[in-house]
Image 1 (spheres, helix red, strand yellow):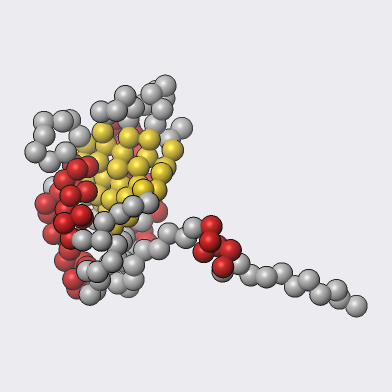
Image 2 (cartoon, rainbow, N blue to C red):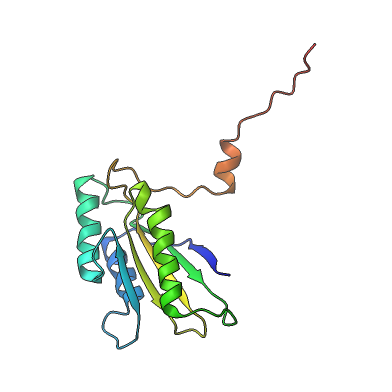
Length: 152
């Protein structure tokens, strides 16, 4: 059973977006990595340019540049890197692409367990609005208060 973790600290510069895509794609190494673009190219340079084009046309180049998730399987899980990658791509398609957010997916098998990185272009391709992940504080702030008055 995989675990999906949201990586909290993400970069706020164009260079940080480039760096995360280079890192997850293992650019410049000989590591065996499965790569897929979900709405973008599977080449990390092309995906970077597509992410940046989307940000520029929506005037959203400032602030957080991406959202990063890691889907991890236990070393005891009976799964291949190809199946893990397929699951990550399907997750990205159903949860992000269908809502207007493109992603880059890279699956690694270098830490003793199989894991997939999902790097999300946090600017919606249709609306131009930025992706916001709600935390517990946001949920409490936006909670609808129940009517506690007694009815007679």
